[in-house]
Amino acid sequence: MTQKLIYEGKAKKIFETSNPNELMMEYKDSLTAFNALKKGEFSGKGQLNCQISTHLFKLLSKNKIPHHWIRTENKNQMVVVKTKIIPLEVVVRNIIAGSLAKKLGIEEGRALKKPLVELYYKDDALGDPFVSDDQAFEFGWAQPDQLQQMKKLALTINEILTPSFAEVGLKVVDFKLEFGLDPSGVLVLADEISPDCMRLWDMQTNEKMDKDRFRRDLGNIEGAYKQVLERIERIQV
Amino acid sequence: MTQKLIYEGKAKKIFETSNPNELMMEYKDSLTAFNALKKGEFSGKGQLNCQISTHLFKLLSKNKIPHHWIRTENKNQMVVVKTKIIPLEVVVRNIIAGSLAKKLGIEEGRALKKPLVELYYKDDALGDPFVSDDQAFEFGWAQPDQLQQMKKLALTINEILTPSFAEVGLKVVDFKLEFGLDPSGVLVLADEISPDCMRLWDMQTNEKMDKDRFRRDLGNIEGAYKQVLERIERIQV
Image (spheres, each protein chain N blue to C red):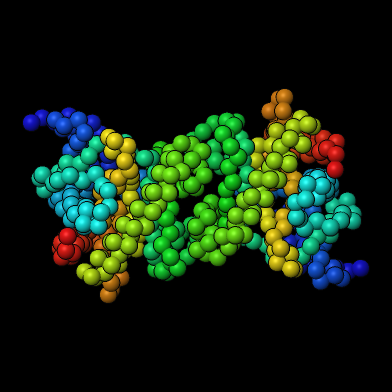
């Protein structure tokens, strides 16, 4: 069956399906960082992220988190509910790293007293700027009740992922989520959950097991992603 | 009486006084922008800002806003309550301009649906980054009740300034406030209120009457500041 490509992003392609309420999401092998100024790829990366995401959506299903995943059909393709994406990236942080460390001049690795939720406006041309709740309302990116629900879901997801990852020796440093409204207007978790949009550190060694290996030229990206899949699959779903 | 200089900033000097609960704030003639990368000055600028601030503190007194101003002793010196400054700049915006316009790729001049309050962490070395309420709590810059009070006071001050300035032909585009805790722990407005930390546009012509004349090399900075003082003094206090 030929599918119509309706969107191609930095790491995924989205196709229409025969069902108007469903989309096919294909994970690409490409890696990008710094708003696509740095580009790379490795063969099989799409499959790894698709398998990791699949397992994590199953874990979230078990924990009653509403999400867009329906089924994974091929190694790098999943069928998802068609949603209207809310143009905000919701970031949850447990440990200071990345842009927050840089912004505040703090060394990476300090644990936060409690998880921080941050919003970024999804706009590549503007570099996905950090925004406040009030800005999100003012510019109509989300309604107050939606934003409250997104933040609550993000913190609940963190409470599910953090102990599960700890069981398999992975520290959840931070991660980025996206949300959308399904055809009946219900807010659900969308996009993916993979080492492309999480910081994961080995519990014992603090070795980075995520896209920072690519961003910072640490090498063995493929090995780290494979390790993550292998460990994640040990989490019972 | 010789006074001990205890702090010198970009636009003001702070001296001890014989009263341990009071400080002398001296307004300098210097102008700086872009975190002091751009420097200038004009003779009498300190006096203008001190006189403008004085009049506005009187206006706020009339409206029961707690603030640090006690009296203006010389043309460019005011005696203020000694406060412990909260390291957050509180910005109120009525019209999109400056950093917000740049961040969101929006042309300057669009009115906001309702006034926006933003927080910036006061740290020159970090370039005063934009921060969220949650970050302010996490890093201990303000307590939740203090922040709520600061934001409420900022919006009330906007409600006082905006119509008063309109009477004398000035649009309040945005302004920056700082707050401190007085010796008994009460939150009060501190710092200054002048064209150095406000955007003021002429109601008829939209001509800029504030530090943007310096930032953007528009010339006649002194004339604009003098105009602001002359108009502001027509506001009854």
